[in-house]
Picture 1 (cartoon, rainbow, N blue to C red):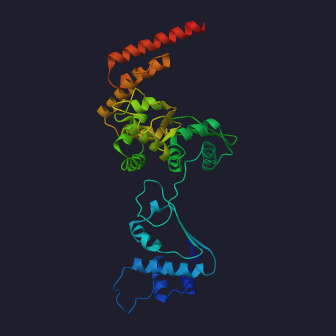
Picture 2 (cartoon, helix red, strand yellow):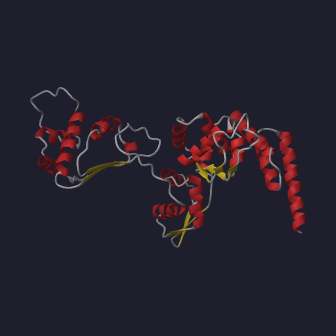
Picture 3 (cartoon, rainbow, N blue to C red):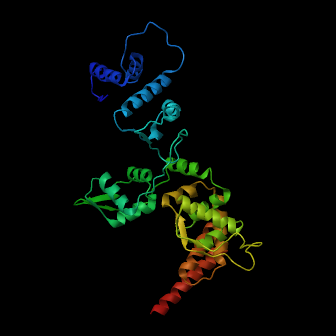
Amino acid sequence: CGIEFDDTPAQRFRKTDRLRALGLSYNEVRTLGATLGLAYPVTDYPREGRARGLDIIVAIRKALHALSKEGSVVLVLEDLHFADDASLFYLPLLLKGLRVPGLAILTSRRSGASIPTCPGTFLPLAPLEPENVARYLTHALGATSCADEAAHWAHVETGGIPEWLEQLLRGAPQGAFALRSGHLTVTPWEPPTQPFAKQRVSAWLDPLRETERQFLMTAAASPSPMEGGTLIASVEGDPTSLSRSLHRLLARGWLKGSLESDVTDDATVGAWGRGHEPKHEGSVTLRSQMHARVLQSLMEAPELARTHQRILSALESMPVENADDAGRLAFHAVRAVDRQRALEYQLRAAQLASDAQEHAK
């Protein structure tokens, strides 16, 4: 109807009445006008039968049919996660069976939002790449350019998820983002875990299998990307099933990285198979640092300690070649509350670092 926020009631009445051209009856136009706050004369007949929401849906469907006869029509319903409960209740009735030539309906919602099941094709949008994160930051903060370091840090923190980028900017401390002659730079900080993030991640975790949840919790406990073999060894279960679960998480985008596996259906007998130890080349990590912090916050202290203990046991089966390897062992021993082994690995890391320095000299 072209109604503007500052239109007078008389202007709104005139604009709403244009809907009569689409074949809508007076009562249907009146029902739609009432949703805009227009006060019509009181009717002589009592309102009985179906709810007004159904009348609104019927009127909209009739209008869409009429518009589509004149040309192509695209109905866009954006940000359904902000819609009120009554609108969401009637949404399936609006969309169901609405197959009209020349009519396309597009809806958008954030992942994890509670939205009724609607007909159509679901298209999950991929997270933003670092270059598009830079464009987002540039636009949102009014800059002309963005430092590569700033875009990379924001991408690592949020995984390129627009909603999480929005929250990152909203919770940024004073002076974290700086503009110098239009060029955007950032001073990194560790954003606190927000309640909305816990809700999103909890909703994503609900449909996952127990082994998949363990993979995510284990990856969250590691401060750096984990080798595929180490991650597999840190979770209890059949190697073939674990490998499939790990690849499912990679395919769904929960984990990122490259992983090649030689595990097949008949590759295992007992624990590892006929003398054949499955190989998983490559490393994987969580989608973002925010995911890691949220997953850690969802674990109780004993569960987190047990997770670090499993990682420590998996790492101990591998050779310690340098100070970084020993330091990684010490890191997980400290968090597994194993003070004796933590001290041993810290001293070993120091000795290996000293040896490497002497060798370099």
